[in-house]
Image 1 (cartoon, rainbow, N blue to C red):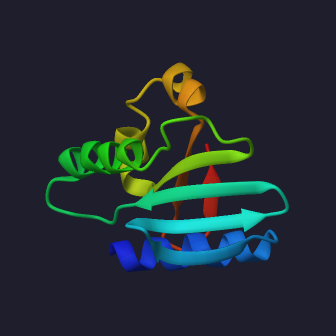
Image 2 (cartoon, helix red, strand yellow):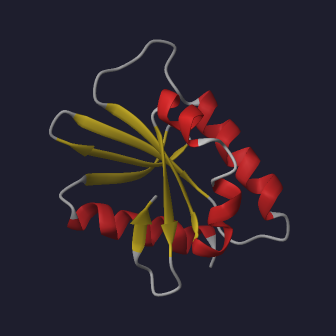
Length: 114
């Protein structure tokens, strides 16, 4: 599954949940807004170096975080189901402190939050 397919599936699922979704906003793959909530998401597809690319994705997301906390702002990494274990290498406690959720996209394009 290519990155564009991961992004498309995540955007479709987010829209179905009532989010207003934009892509490629200030170098962020997906920006979603609903009421007073915002979500910045970085996505990766299947590659020949998935571990390295997942690490790069986290770095990209960290660089896009604002210097000061913003109420209602969360972050997400979105990956194909096949590389979920790699995206989960960052401990849940650290992801929680940073406000990062992990989403996976299955082969049938269903999206799951973990």
